[in-house]
Image 1 (cartoon, one colour):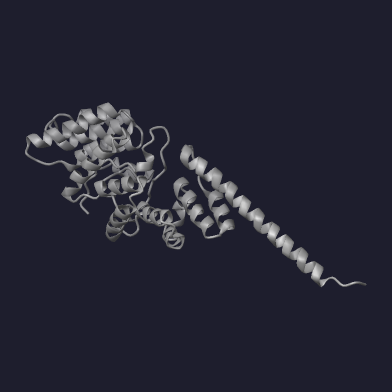
Image 2 (spheres, one colour):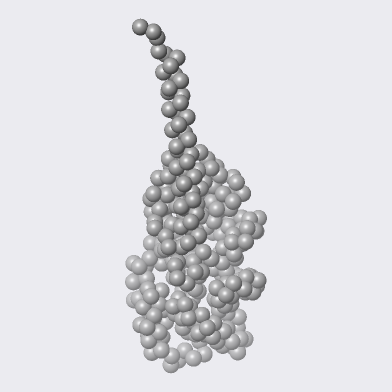
Length: 295
């Protein structure tokens, strides 16, 4: 895939500005969007991008590492010669978006789109990113409209964003169709596999869901969202000890919805384990009485 590094992708569940999932991926093989977005890049991958021959890409990599001032300073140094470059304004918008300055981000994404329009060009990157702004503002219909428009160019990120949106609103048929479409392109992408596992979990097809979770590389299984969902599937399959261990291995989370889910699931698992223990104790006691003989 041609390396673009132009898009800013946010998984839907990371839209909370205070706490975001750690979705870093070390190997590009596990990253469907490797050529379109740096959002899931690990620190090692981002550090390599700092030395990229394109100064704009090198600059924005600092923003992905939360060094927003350095990134913006480097972009300002490259303003000359880039005023009519839509990608330049998109990178500026990306830095502001990553730092949660949504009004400025929207301004620069719009500037990128308008700059392209003046040149009678489409710029799906900016459309996608404006969709993310609408997503953060909870204007879901507008976000979906922008993602649909952006995907016409053939890039994958808007499709990925649509998938997350469909999942959030329980449109499982549409989500499944899109997830399998993306899986055909890269069947090792962590979040695409998670999406498929989640879809089957929500449909109540826990065995199929478990099979998808088993495809996820071990180093990702302790991710706060993945471990919680996987434990739910194991619980419904009656694998209570495994579910308990999966939760124990899961990363600590500050995301309240995930935290509450894990807390409630832990109680349910403990209740089932206690029930099984009581049944086993009663069975042993009953067997012992049968086997006893008067002296």
